[in-house]
Length: 197
Image (tube, rainbow, N blue to C red; front, top):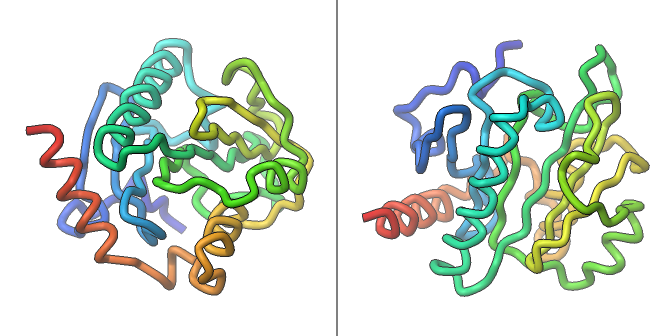
């Protein structure tokens, strides 16, 4: 199966490039659960952001900082960010549905963040150097810019999307392959393009 990020059809609205740096694209998310749902996608085909080279990692962290600020400017609140990272070794236990490094930036605050953190066995980390390319992980950055990591969770695809849709009251619509939320994609593109003018 070919990689959806390596073979993007840029004529499709969901593949609109919002921003581009040397090593990353910023795109709206297919299945944008809310108005304000973007992804930072590695141009290089790697399993997770844990595989970034040092110069890529610096660029990635600058993009995170930039988009936290842009979300605050546009939506008047900081977003959440998360990544489902897959290990480099061949495994049937990969926890993401697209094995190409991408980080979700979402205009959402969890109703009960403490419970979500406990349920997924998240531990607070000081920086992204704690993520490992040897294990499945979920990295989560909350609106206060506190970073968490877990390697101890059931490897269920779209785990964070399932939790977000449950929070939003439509948990049966988590699957990006079935639910596009095109109106949210269009609104997000419009707002970010206006912000960049």
